[in-house]
Image (cartoon, rainbow, N blue to C red; front, top):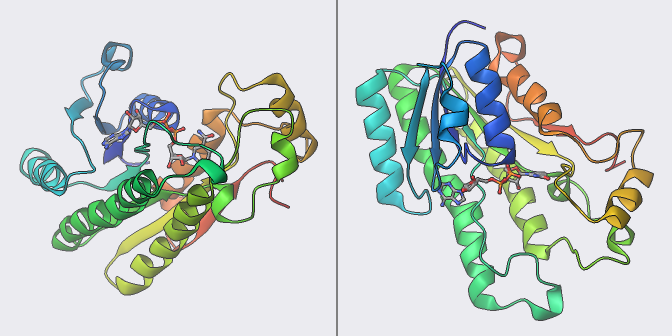
Length: 249
Ligand SMILES: NC(=O)c1ccc[n+]([C@@H]2O[C@H](COP(=O)([O-])OP(=O)(O)OC[C@H]3O[C@@H](n4cnc5c(N)ncnc54)[C@H](O)[C@@H]3O)[C@@H](O)[C@H]2O)c1
């Protein structure tokens, strides 16, 4: 890949951090945007290509400020990968305990803010005559959860997560078609679950649904994103790439 300038939102999270690390190793310039910037030093080790910006992307004025700043400072932005994942404190409660206030907040922040950040970065891409936007959906946006996987654990897959993540796939297709013939590449990826100290019982149940690995490592998702960032995917548009070791089959 030629050296690119890439914004990663949620760049200190599970996927964002692994992606930042990979892109910095490849020599790209990474603008890492997050509400928390706690692992900056780990990422900065010997790297002048890293820029860290603290911003709350649930707020339109902060999105606007971010894009204006990047335009001024870097002159061009080649890609944005939207890994930010804003959740309420009660995220993940069972359906019978779901409250309208937190439902609205999660829909607004996870789905609404994705539309708003897409709008601002695409405006910049249109000015530059090129750009690559990658959104993050999930296998829960593709298929229903396999509820049996959660048996014997306190975990659940929220109904609003399914709504949000299928919404992200629709947004991707809409934006790609709406901006056809403008030299933009807009796609999304749908990862399966990623191993993150999850209960043993869940890990075992989950693996039964997969081909051989079960829960993924962040790197498995990063590989697919790297492909979408590269010229090798230049004619892939409005697509959703599922990375799930066969879980959703
Ligand atoms: N981890 C998984 O198992 C998994 C599986 C499928 C899909 N996904 C999707 O991938 C994306 C990233 O997931 P993750 O596991 O890396 O999440 P994560 O929670 O590990 O990281 C998300 C990051 O976003 C940041 N963030 C939260 N609110 C923000 C805001 N308002 N403004 C800016 N930054 C904000 C957080 O500080 C955090 O660093 C999400 O869309 C998620 O749904 C994750």
